[in-house]
Length: 134
Image (cartoon, rainbow, N blue to C red; front, side):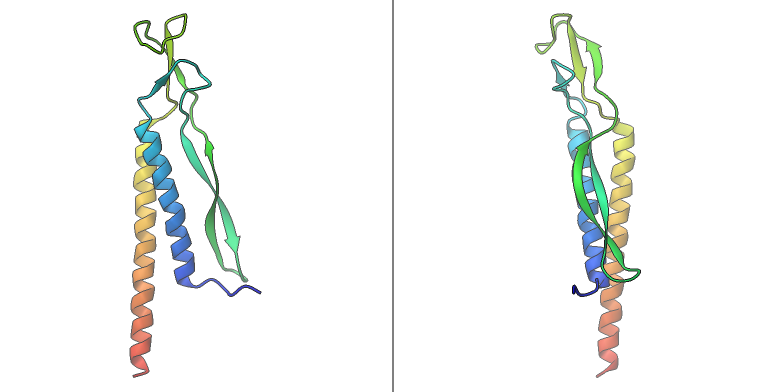
């Protein structure tokens, strides 16, 4: 039988999941201006899929199950002078909503910071408890 999750396990796994979320958002923003010669080759926004991990009654945390391409479809633009343009003079811009990605980044950063605060509080409480025994 596995040992129950501690507050450090729970917050650490949550921070790891938020870090994946921040990295995929950074990748999406970095590729937001990219174009391709076909719809199939165009960049699509990446999104992590989270899974609940339980260990013990009423105790749960999170893990990243997978990262999938999601979001809006690539957008066709007429740019006949572009080197990647197809025979009709079209290129496909990355399917990334930069405003939504920035909101996602701020939210993930705040959730990461919340878990840092949880760890700091748990550490302080643990140290204070140990001092009581001295």
